[in-house]
Structure formats: structure tokens, C-alpha cells
Amino acid sequence: MGKERLLASDFDGTLNFGGIGEEKRRLLQEWKSNGNFFAVISGRGIPDLIRLMNENIIRPDFLVGDNGATIADGSGTILMETGCRGDLVTELAEYLFSLGCDWATVRASSFEYHFKPEGFYCADWEIPVGSLPSVPYFTQMSTSLPTPEETVRVIGCIKKRFARELNPLKNGCCIDIVSNQMNKAEGIRRLIKRIGVEESRVVAVGDDLNDADMIKAFPSYAMDNGVEEIRKIAGRTVPGIDELIRDLLKNR
Image (cartoon, rainbow, N blue to C red):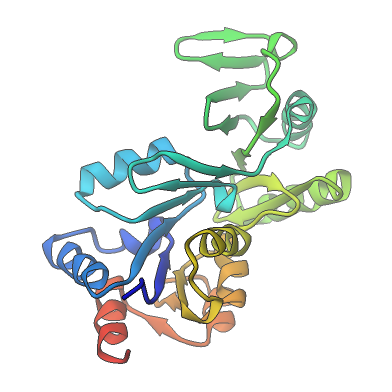
């Protein structure tokens, strides 16, 4: 028998809400043992997700990082990446600083650079932005603002200036900037096309605005602790992953 369904779960505020204890791990393993796929989908990068999976002793089938732009198997081997033009990095970082951001991070599977207004820094040294090594592409640039209102303002500016190429996604006071064709829903679509799961057999769950696209696209749930807009879009809420998996296994 082939794999039946895919459970795609956000990590922060969703899978890790209330911690990840033995019962949650047991239920995730039961879900997989019943012939289903489990994927963690997040705005985090794949190396960070691997670290978190190891720390919490979770073994997903797939990791979907950078809000869908990077797809890896459970061991972290990259299967697909969707990038933005590398020559946008300096322009975008400098534009973010002009809008009031005081840091930015840009990455792909092969690098991660951290920026401050005076330059970019790797490990313990700082280098002027103009000296950034040439990169062919990046999968995501991230930043944050002090308040939700400022975050919304900056997102509007990014959309206006880079509408043809970039998609800024709100996640609390953070902004994750990916290709304009990319979001969590598109990441899931690309994954299920590869593994042969129908869209109707996907169950997605999340809690914040960067989950909106996948919540709209697939049979979905929002966390009880999620933002109001996500709860409204989903129409169904759950207190935690434990309860969701129990319900899904009961109602096959």
C-alpha cells in the first residue's frame, strides 16, 4: 500500500506548541506507521530545522524550509530549491535598512550571510555590503521590525518596489522574503507532485500569517493559539498536534 496522506505542520507555534514530549513523538510515529507522510514546513532554513528535529528527536519524512522555497528529505538532503536572483541581495538589504530594519539574513542551501547597516558579517567579522561575495541565487532574506504596524508598512514598500520578483511574508514582526512564485502552499504542491500524493489528501496546520497560503489551498486547521485571520481562514481549530493526529487516525 502506498502512502495515504501528508500532514504538513508549521513548526514554531504549531508543532512545538506546548513542547514536544514523548506522547507527541509517539503519535507522529503512529501517523507514519499507518502509511502516511509527515512534513515540517517552516520559514526557518533546513540546517536550523535539522538541528531542531535532532534536539526534539523527531523524524519527519520531509522538511520544507524557507516558506516553501527549499525542500529536503528527512535527513536534510536538498531535493529542490526555488531561488531569487543573487544580484538582488545588496539592493534588497540596503533598501530594508533604509526602511528602518537594523538586520537582515540571506541564505540558500550553500551559504548564509547576516547583514547590519554597516556591512554583512560572517561569524565574528564584518565586511562592507559592497564586498559581498557574488551569489547566483538566494532562497530567502529575512528581517524584522519592532512592531506589527511597522512590519506591515515595510511589507507594503517591498511589494511596491519588487512586485515582479519578490514575495514578502509576515510572520509576527518578522518578514521572510522569497521568490514571488513561492509560499508554503506552492512548496507543498511541489513536494506532493514529487511523492505522488493528491492535494485532497494533504492536511495542513499552522498559526501565523505566513501559513495563510497553505491554509487556503488545502484541507487545513489553525491552532487555537493562532492569529485571528488564520483561524478565520481555516474555519477549524485544534489545541495541538496531538489532538489533530488522534482525530485524523480515527477518521480515515
